[in-house]
Length: 181
Image (cartoon, rainbow, N blue to C red; front, side, top):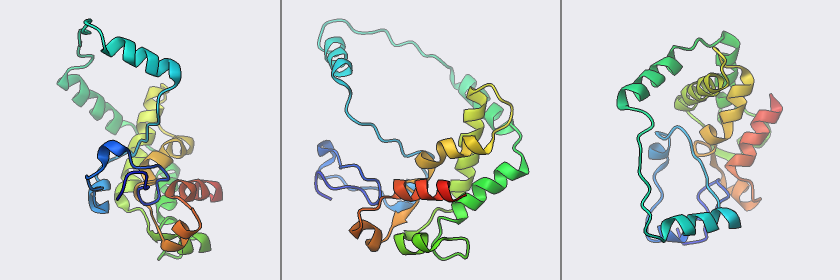
């Protein structure tokens, strides 16, 4: 891909720093739990970045968590219970992204060439558990699944040529999936 082109379905230009590199194959992208896009900083943020990185001051880096604490937090998140209706919601959301299933809307069948796989359902639940825990709740709700849906699904849904021709991105398809309940 050339600089300024977009990755399939993400709607964001490829950064110039990545010119000459190749995007990961879909099978490799699926291994990443989240696909997070980061835009340019605001003027004030950029000014602060430049001020803090062009002088002689070298900040002291202090670890915030040990490896053991990270493993313990991961175990704590995994141990949170999830109700059957939240599990079903996540699985149904993912299944509706697949154009070759009876669960898919006509638009999905037209705009999606490949939908999200079972790993997406797993990551929706894990992400929802993390959101619930950060909110101080002991179990995730459907809203927590919805909160992580874009960052979990947008790189797992491959848009069709028809969608690309109409300017439809995978993020827009995720929005549609969430609206259609």
